[in-house]
Length: 228
Image (cartoon, rainbow, N blue to C red; front, side, top):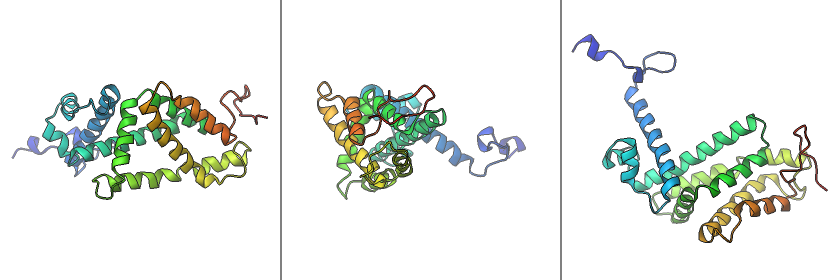
């Protein structure tokens, strides 16, 4: 074999230019990420029931079998799509906070985005309900998902409470679980009757019950003030 044939390609190098010994795996990871990004896009456009694996594969430029090769099964792909959406939402919230948005406003923006993506919301609602069965192939994946999100915002809620922007008689370590439970139930009601269920408005009502100041209770210097 010639030296040219064995020379590593750009795909086999990391960001420093060093040769990776796992170039094939890296390329596989990139393809997997592309598939998941495309799946999120297609579910957002066509809805949960209207989306076919063939359409996702077509947009990526691979066969149906090639698509499933990266995830083992259709259910594996669906669960991975939810996990990827969670990761994108987490990164977006971090970027928004870094740009000056408050923690609470990043939650509000998340709810607003959900109202524009009923297909992805339906995917989450249906799969999480089905995965409550211990025999379901995505059971462990969803159980681990909720284990991670239950307490991911404990410190943020504790800071709100210390600042007098969260009622004192609640445990900040439990508020995140309450928010998640409320949103899961609210999303289900919204999917069933979107014209009658104001998801953004009801979320704001829930924040009011926690005595979290409304969005417009901010001074011009960007600091939130306590509402009467």
